[in-house]
Length: 366
Image 1: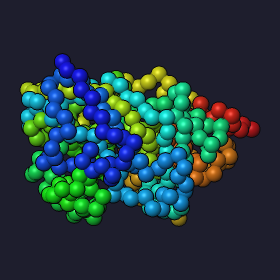
Image 2: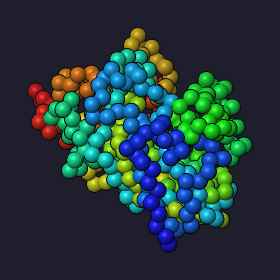
Image 3: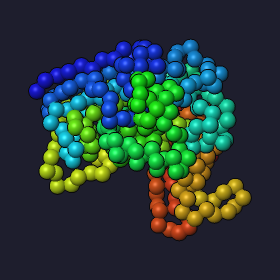
């Protein structure tokens, strides 16, 4: 077994050095590294915003952010012996983060985008196992670092299917604007990294953390594995559109499995919840009923929006947070859960806020 270090200059944005990573999925990308089955790789990863938020950034800087640049990925990694029809096993041996993170509210993006039209930025110091911010006084969020984007390359046939089906529903089309690397046909035909797909990508599944194992279907020779978008912490749902975004470093081990009993058609993750997640929460509950009192039968998105809106109101009333502070906190630490989805016409989505994040302020009791 060999060890490798894939180390693009993460302090320099991919936009400045487009040959040091990629931000689209495509089968024809040249491998950044070739490894053997069973090898370990230490991978340096840029933050999911490609370094566009720094310590001195302001709310107004978010208005000029290039949204074609997110998810700069490190890779692809060619795994010798991996063939279409195999399963790629990726053991996440360790996830480490930088000491700086950010959670922006970007206009036009997020679960409640229509209710938060203005930019708002929280920057975090990441030290001693906690995230803290001068803009969120009295709040400390424990580290629960994970890999936001991890995936393998599609075949040319699957890429064509992805682009066609997304065009049919008005999703953002492939475009060379902001693509890295910039050569064709990759730049103008590669699938964007914003939506997750069958071969992984922007999953934002917090279970992809230290000690977990990810199983991916393989579509092309070598699998062409890439990853990035490290999150220091995130609530299930990532409701404002961003987590605590940060640079990071991930150590993995890769294996190609064949003749498996179960062939996954989407990623499968094996993981263990960390002990600190067994903590006391406050939960709000949302149902698919709009502001005019109309029912939208079985609409879990509306139920989720209502659960988050009610949590934002609770955080304002009980903790004294502004709406923007509360929305950021929801994205960074509040978990959305489908509590029930069978009782027509009202599914219930719960929003769970851990109470131990409040260090200096405490919810008031009558």
